[in-house]
Amino acid sequence: MQKRSNAMITITPTAEGKIRELMQEEKDTVGLRVYVKGGGCHGYQYGMAFESVMSEDDTVIEKGDVKVIMDSQSAPLLAGCEVDFRDTVQGSGFEIKNPQAKTTCGCGSSFSA
Image (cartoon, rainbow, N blue to C red):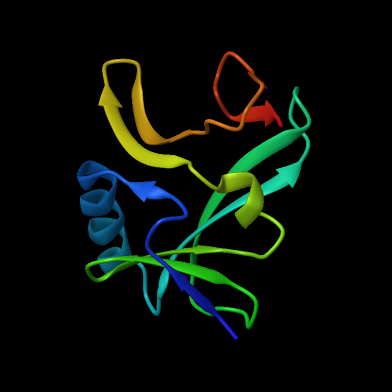
């Protein structure tokens, strides 16, 4: 059974708008999956992908018509995170701020908990 949560992670208004915009371009998308996998220079690495199917044990955060999906193994490592979208001279992309991360790499894509 999928769990619905409004408090597990925070999605900034900027990220919410960008997710909505990108979802309109993707066919059959139900939401953005945010996940953590082993790897990177600090043990864990963040990942994101548009999802067309949700699993039974997924946690879903809904912000208006935008859904952020996390699998049961990633959800505890993402608890308290903020998902933002940054558009700067150096580049643009989603950024995850994780208060649980003890250390992060310079590019911000891996962390240790």
